[in-house]
Length: 116
Image (cartoon, rainbow, N blue to C red; front, side):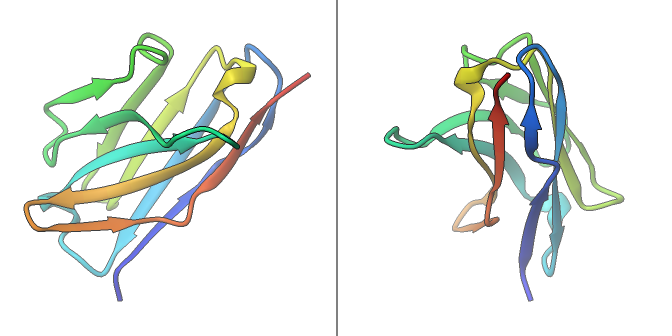
C-alpha cells in the first residue's frame, strides 16, 4: 500500500523553527522527486520547496528561500523540511508530493501555525 505520511507540524511562535517529515512506503521512493506544498485558508496551494530523487537538486519559493531547507534520506524513505525564522504568514497545511513521470502520490498534510 502506497503511503506518504507527514509529521512535525504544530504551533510555534514567530521566529521559531519546525522540522517537517514526509515518510514514504509502498513504492520505490528513491526514484521520485518530492515537493512540499502549503495551503492557507482562502488561498491557493503554493509550492514551497522541491528536491530531486537523488537530492542533488533543490528549488524554493521566493517567500521561503533562505529560511527553509529541504533534504532527503533515501535510506529512511523520508524527506525533511527544516523551517526557520517562521512568520505568521507561513501558517498553512503543509503536504508532500512524490512524483515521477506518469505517477504522483500525496500525503494527508500537517498543520503549521505560527502565532504568538
